[in-house]
Image 1 (cartoon, rainbow, N blue to C red):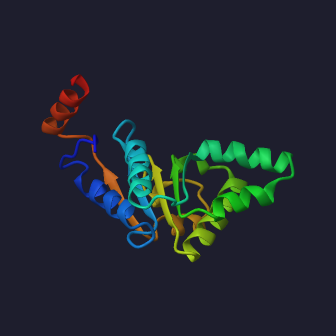
Image 2 (tube, one colour):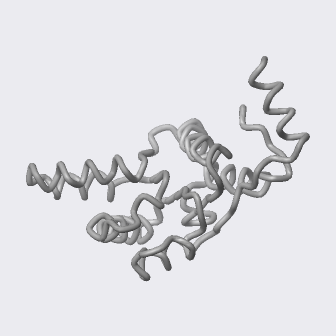
Image 3 (cartoon, helix red, strand yellow):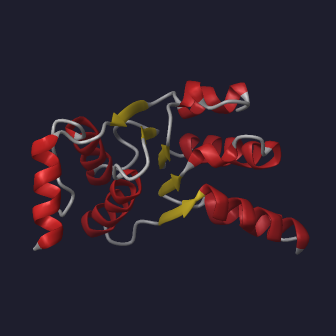
Length: 173
């Protein structure tokens, strides 16, 4: 509700609202990309919050890709990979932020690929954010890049003057 909507992000906000209100039914996966500080993380978390408010009991999980990487390393070290896999494969909505962190991490890419397939096959919703579109992520495994871009890919552009003023007014209030 406190995300300031303007021409630069209107389509991304509409797609996010649609996904939050009916997870798994529309735009699966949803891939949101844009520059630093444009609201990708805010929007991803808003999807999760609205989804939970709309459907209490929904299994929603938000994580940044670098935290997922640390969690995977710990699961390998502690020999708890099955628990790791079950945690993610049992979700109704996965919000994976900063997916560009996967670049150069082949083992993590493989895990995300399998998590994606499992969730997608069961009709669970997946939302990714990144600083660039899937096809522009260098050294990303082809099959994973294909999956990331297989749904709706939307961008958030830098806000125009009117939206910047509205953002400043909201922050000042």
